[in-house]
Image 1: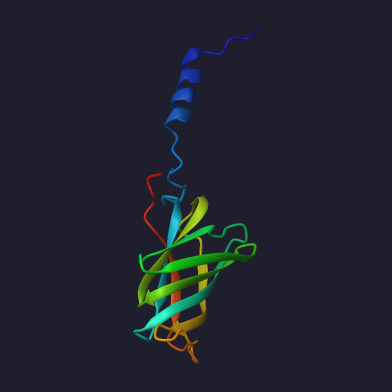
Image 2: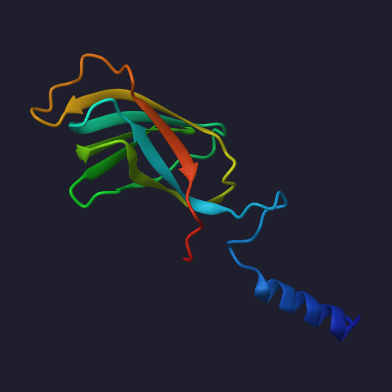
Length: 146
């Protein structure tokens, strides 16, 4: 039986024990499991919006969505690999409307395309006849501590 030297083995154990799931990527960025979904709207009284979010990597897509406002609700539906549909219903204005959560930490540089597919008036929830002036973005949030 061959004995391994103790120092290299001890060093390896210590290095493994110090590894965290929030490790810095070789690009210097810190991986995150949360991204913010922001809406740009030309209206002051939107009551809901439906968006399609597509990842630049087909294996990466959000698995959960949380509305930014306590007065809103949000839903997520998988469309296909790397693509989801998100609906946020409530009193919406321009700015962050939801947080997207991923099942694991990912590189914050992954590109997402967010497209507003439908928007509804807050007064009667009638669909807006035009989506002109609407925009949406997905950006990395600060890494969570859990």
